[in-house]
Image (cartoon, rainbow, N blue to C red; front, side):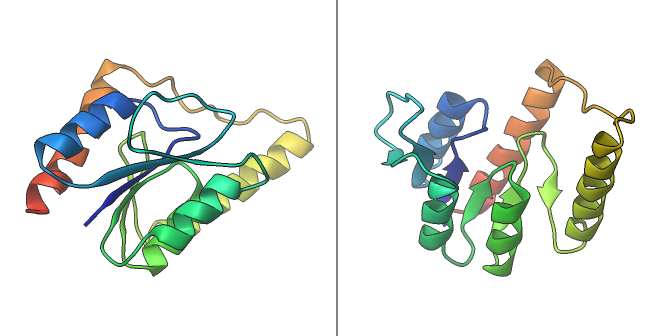
Length: 143
């Protein structure tokens, strides 16, 4: 197993890398060159529409662990039998993707009609700890 982090929108990257090193699991952070990370694990791709996502999707293999908030990346990673986790601590599954995509569609329609859309609450320390605990539990079982 290798851990792939979608660096475009993932918090706690240094802590994630530290956990991967602790459990000796290879890790790669994929982002475009508009981001700055001072880590050896960064795979920098040129800026362009979906360039980081496409690179990540072309590199992942069966049973890798992908951390992303991008539904498109999540769907394809699931099709490749990867474990996929959102930075809010929710695992993407084949069973919940339809619901998540429907919610996104409904919210987009509401926004177009200038109607109120429910906002996701701000990530707090409890959310951060839950997310990191889930990551660590996956890394522990990878041995």
